[in-house]
Image 1: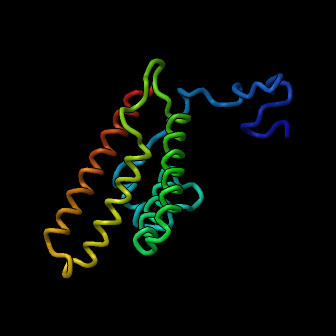
Image 2: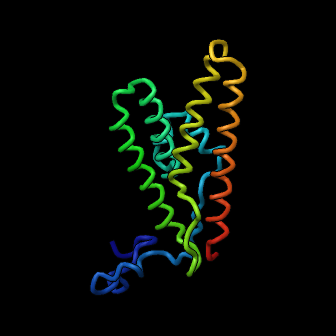
Length: 168
């Protein structure tokens, strides 16, 4: 509808399917990545699929659910692993599209999707061991917490590298 706020008039529409002019200039839109606290919360809550929730948080929540499923239903591991791989690729593609970095930047040295999957696995494992600490023992709980801390540090380092490579 002409005259709607934020909508271009017909005269301003691009010709010959050139939709790039409809997209905002990258410098005017600042994308962000969730920090490890937000990711940890998404791994624990199924409510990360609410409207407006960051796509990476939604995908992270789905990864954690898949890790829980593989623990409960080990006979579905093949199916779960295929779906986890799809989600890892979706995360990496989201980053490549929304946070491509400065010209010449070759991307992070590690997949953010893989880091999310590893952190989801570590979170699910740590939560499980903590719930059953009496039967698994203090050392086992501590080991899981250390693994989760390392995964969270890896996530934070990758996010910092991606953000630092942005042209704005």
